[in-house]
Image (cartoon, rainbow, N blue to C red):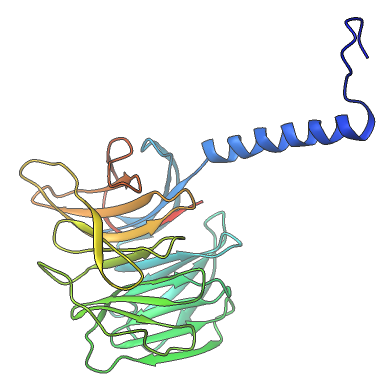
Length: 285
């Protein structure tokens, strides 16, 4: 008790309060230190790290002129980068950007995602396969038949799989069983897909990004980048733990690419920033 008669926290109680204060400060620091990892293709392929304001933090993984097709990042911070063209493989890099492996899969690689089970999910042509982090088969094989070549893939916290293709959007449970029917999206085929912690998922096509309920019903918001004389085509989507939607674009008629961040209500969170080459993957950590 101090001179004014106020009882001060002592012993274990004071220690707990101190620990809580430290935890809150560290949590705030982590939020401020959030990094956006972007896989760019064309104009010099590679993975670069950006601050939320678009400042380049590090050119992490140079890939030369490789035909990059997608990226996933696991809980250990390892990067899995899909390479198409004549290679059709997945290259693995440690958190510092050093290559530590490569998988030859025998299928095209059009998109990658990580699941809550730690497995890597690969969309290639009409096939969806899962792999363990060491490259061994993960046990899941989905032959989508005539549903169209996959253009993007996402996995939610329950292990459900979302696939965008030239025919529309399909969903599967963790065993590969279809969930409901495929549904088409307006305007043009979806080029990418992302799913949030609330079960909503987001699919991008020729210009906008649309929001869908878990039932497949389209809802608000529809997200667009307000640029005049430019057709920004969404090519990668991910949803952060903060609920924000991160969208990578290749801007037709502009010759460059960018990333835009949207709040859950569809409003842009700051300005879009240039990435240098066509965006093929985004991860937020």
